[in-house]
Amino acid sequence: MIISQIYFERYWISSKSLSFNSWMIGLVIIITYFIQEFFLLQISLVNINQVVFMQVIATVMVFRNRVYKIWWPLLALTPFFANLAEYLLGLLPLTNWWYWIVESIVFTSISLFLVKLHGCSKRARFFMAIASLGIIELITLAINRNYSLVSIAACKLGLFLIAVFEEQLVKVEQRNDEKIKLIQRESQRDDLTGLLNYRALDHEISKLANKNETNNIVIGALDIDHFKTINDTYGHFVGNEVLNHFSTFLRKQIHTVFPQHGFVYRFGGEEFTIVVSNYSIKEVDKLLHQVERMLSEQPFKSKDGFKLSISFSCSITNHLKDESLDETLKRADKMLYLVKENGRGWINSDRYSDQKIENGTTSPLNMTSE
Image (tube, rainbow, N blue to C red; front, side):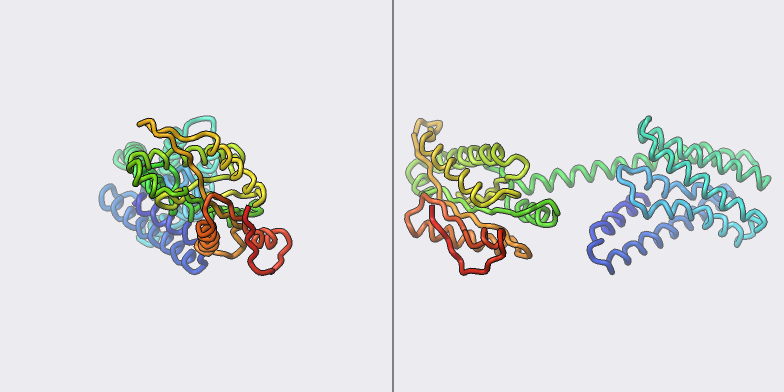
């Protein structure tokens, strides 16, 4: 039950951008929760002739690593649901309605206090919450004059066993979540160079574009010159060494000059993409010229002793507002094609997109070679 609620909740959070979907999945979570509560009520009545364990699910959910607000009202409403069900079944008199409110306020307050109490571990706070629920259940039995060995055992031992079991379920779900995240991270990495791939690039652009503090995004398309000739002349193993050397060198320079704002991706083959946020296209252009000069001054030496001079062709442009990643990459790719057509080994800067970022001009595309 806990696992199903967690996955419902995740889908609810991911669909919040769509108002209708958000309301629908929120409603599904609420309905599912109270269906589960009804089954818990039936199970406890059939087995021990007492209504217990009703607030365990909501308690588990609010004590997870990330607490979502939907569970607090559900936690507060659960005593009303349980007591109303008992009243309808003829198990409780309506004269104790005031206690339903007190029970709700007391347990919700205790849970809120324990969630915010960071002096002890989350595990300890969770068990303290379950213990307080057991105490409240015992007080309820005393008010209703319904003490019995079975009911007392259910309030204490039963709640403890359920707490242990539910905690283990959450841990299993968390381990599965970590495995999924690991697989997702690995799927976004290029096996050869260790660089992020196109999937990660698309995700990063969307994230940067939605950040209020992002002023502009510069995207560059790079291509190692005459890479096919390197493969044909020295073999694919040397070609792989060249790819690793170039990607490592470029990533180091980008990360050094643009810390926290520069990323390097392998787009495919000998093609690479750089993304720099909150820096101008001129600053990126300047760094790439430095990289070009440093590579020419430091020839690459393979494991077999081959010395190679590595150069690259490049185009850089700004990712414009309300523009898709593919549209920006197509413009950069078109500019890179012009570089290759004119002899390779130089950098093409899109001054038009830079003007649009600075002052909103709409002049024709003006690509200036460097």
